[in-house]
Image (cartoon, rainbow, N blue to C red):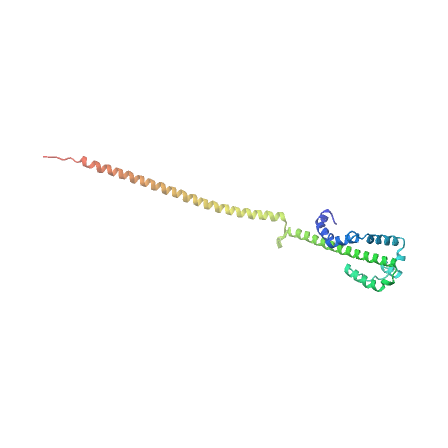
Length: 230
């Protein structure tokens, strides 16, 4: 099940695996572009024209054809392109002088197709493991979206958010109550300070009034005395 979302998710890794500097250079080289070599492409065209006019039995010896068609137990072929080229080199040099130009072209075609098939297999293997890794990553994300709580069962994301909001609300209520107590204590302290100041002012005013009354009494005492002269 490889849908559009999976394709977009894996597109970057596919592009990175396919369009490497080595693959691009090899593509230019095989196409005869860099370095410029049209004969390289024409050789493949001529070889295809020759092979298309003959049957598989005529192109390949009977015993090898049986191996390729599965009529006998097939040997393990070289898997990597490097091993395929190494095996081809070991076969090529001892028999190179004995081969006709047509057989040489067929041999080159066979080795080229073998290497390309091996490269495609490696790319498919890389894509498979990339897709599996992406699948496992998505599965892990889905598993992390819910929290296992033992005997209480499973708490899903929505329930977890509710619990978090409740805990946050309780903590906020506690902080709010604490802040109210602090503000109330400060307000009470402020009121007591104001009352003390007012009481001090009243006391000072009373003392001032008492001092004024005392001065008046002192002034009036000499005038109230009566002196009798006989």
